[in-house]
Image (tube, rainbow, N blue to C red):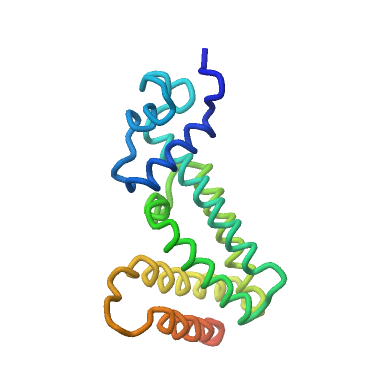
Length: 187
């Protein structure tokens, strides 16, 4: 019988605490079991193993990421929505770099992770549809946006020059606003 109060969601909560405290490399079933106050075999009543736990983590993180992006762009359109999305993306990744590292960077076979990634993409697509771009153009613009923001956010620790990183972020956002023009002419 599963331990009272322990559920897949509680196991994911414990795993997130471990990742937040020690990074993705600290995530083991033994560490999660310890955080939950159970023996490792007891976790198997709630998750099938580390692979399933990582999938559940990816879903939770993508849903948090989507919620932040949605809140940022809600009620906005055009360049204002694009800037809000870019700032929300950067803020999430810099606030939760270890969580972000657990998000698969390529398509995965897990349908739950795919659905969570699609929910995030829907927010980005909606921002670009606000520019009245065709579907193919939205895909191109989304790829450019993700490459730029992912790279900028992940490299944040590499910007040890004296110039303000926030100014560079502003430059990047202004550059990204040109995506709608470039994507509109790409076909």
